[in-house]
Length: 131
Image (cartoon, rainbow, N blue to C red):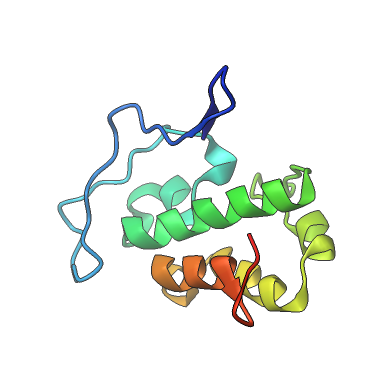
């Protein structure tokens, strides 16, 4: 996420993005790009490399959740093993967002919500725009 001189927010990928359809059931042809991006924003399975199955959709949910937590709390802290530490963000989060953040930061990719569920919960809560 970059901010221009005119305060416009831009998402950039430096040409490493891969288009994945949410209906895909296998990502064997998509390799995690080790060493790309900011490590603490990367899902734990990316840092593990080939030790586990890689799902880029789930990995993106982790990264978006870290970004939302940092924006919410204004703080960026890591654990002793280099993972993002959400404690400060969780202190600021309302309960409905707290549980979603915990799910999005799960170290088990299959336990993370889908991106559509994540965004729908971030944008609407009790019928009101929240973020």
